[in-house]
Image (tube, rainbow, N blue to C red):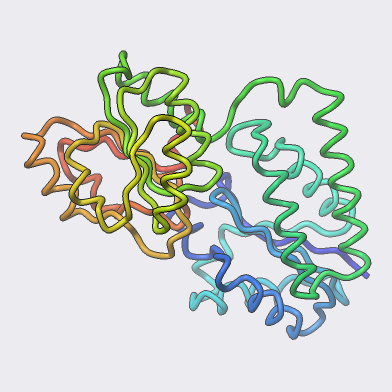
Length: 304
């Protein structure tokens, strides 16, 4: 039975397209089960990160049209809105692609360590949804073994490089002395924790962590002598922020143009540097139109 991988990533699609076909934790189990009832699909697994959305299936033939159509329709899109950005791999090529992904060879930041954890989480979710059978089960267990061997036997993981590291590196290029700056971190997941660690290591002056669950924000902020707030308090504290790094799982923006515009007035138009790592984006795209904001998305970090 053929193995199919169909998807798009940071190489084939801009963030404006990727954010329209993401699978958040609130819908991914329903999506996996819906995918199983599509013609010819026997097993299914979905990997959805800020850099890629990929569907792994075992199928009854070597056609990808049913899965491609499903991906578009599930997100309320027409096929011509997604098909130009999609790639497909079958069997040996599909296995090779997955091994490259899990090993960090296909990442925006070469060798970044987070992707293996994300692949493991995707596998665990598929198992919980009972959409992953024997064939995909064997494939992913083999993948974890190979990725571990790559990390052990090569130097790919020897540098602390990640998307969060790239974001902080960009901040250091813009602000020569971080000790005089205040950073507002939005979210409390692994990416934001890495960003907080890098900022702390480079002597950030002050750190504020905003999250939907204040307890999680407090737990993270406490590690780095920071201050925790709720997402609803962002507008109050944004005028203090010289650096904003955001990475949440919110399906809608958490920071709008009007809020940023008001903050800039209170800052007397001192510039704000912003990095939006999230997909879908946390910061409204229109914010880039403001003259005193330097807004970067996850796609911009590849150059860094």
